[in-house]
Image (cartoon, rainbow, N blue to C red; front, side):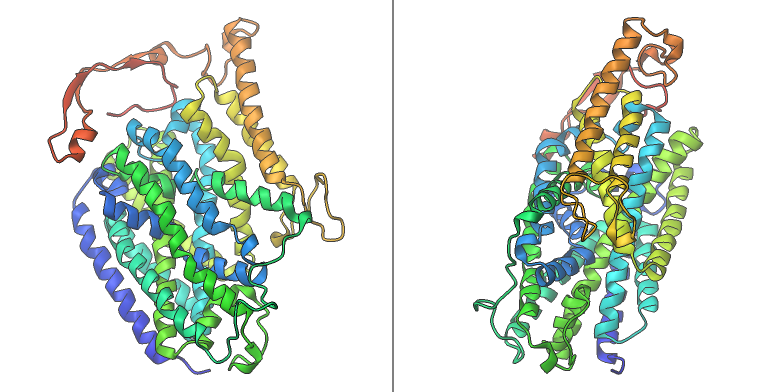
Length: 547
């Protein structure tokens, strides 16, 4: 197949448009030395743009490609990501968005470092960073495969160009550029995919999805009930502790808006996934040997681009490709900004160089965007099992970070001792279950282990998460008892988080300062209320308090 020049020109025009919008939006941060402005758009993201950017971030290339692939390969009954992530956003709005936004954190890791210390926060940064990087790599790889099918061009070139464009406007404009381009990208995704579906349905090679031989709904097998439950909890709870989500929550103009955009994005994700489900269903009822493809689909990851290429006219497939490009860039730019924000603030600022200026942090963040972008691009090009790496890191986010997120938001007595032990217990139990996509053999065989398939049928991810959570609670309470009842001398409190808190950090008192406490009034268009508030309290000595 020759290069699809018309499609290539269309994609180039789309990329130029996205780059222009991103650079235009970057004018809002031009010359700014405030991390709030660059990382959180000055906490001024309104409801409409907030819903667009939150939805577009989740509806990535992996999301729409993966949904079609899952429906084709396993059936709708086992396609859990659409409703799982939608529920995750709604749960986030109910229990986490308001509390996190009201505290005025800059990144998701701020409360972790406030409670467990800066070094433990740096350790928790590792699974968070890995998840973001491998997510970017996975969706860039999905874009490369789509380009190869529809345009017949080199996947490496497609991945590099797409990554460079996403990095460019993110580098200059921060969250402003990401949010504004997300609006255009989400519109492109919606129009591109829905425009393609009717043409695929009316293709001469498509039969019907309502016949008795249709397989798109899938068949339930009780053997996999434990695995189904495991993934359900992973998607709903493991979809929460991501910086890419909390960056939007923390950038909302009010706590109430942070909740509303979470709810709205949850329903938006569900609606946006319908075309992908239909495309997967169409693929199951298509006579592929009669198409120009001339063979059955062996790689289910290519289902969406194959339907666009062989069941729709060329112009329509090009529009559908634009939807895939938009989906990939809307997630890749968000993920790179999230990873660089955490590194520059929670690692560089709070661990490496505590007296760094705001300007210095911004430059470190920009450098991190380039480094992380290059790393994600390299992984997408060179590692065939990139999806396996992403799934493994997503598991770590669920098993390790979710219990600790619940702890820092809702549980007062947990401490660094519990956090460290929970971290490694969760890590060992999850690694013990193995990962087939990476060829990582299990060294812990949980109940109902299938020897023939070498597969864990027990919900071991959720079990690992619960054991990590229980360890966090029990060890924290144990050390609290040992130190407060002087069973152990306070000198043994090496993490300085129970009784051996340095005198200078035991309490703090800040001068009265004008603090905005009128978010609800601001929502009504009036000036925010101001009040002189005197701060006092106890905090972990490893954290810089800024107001």
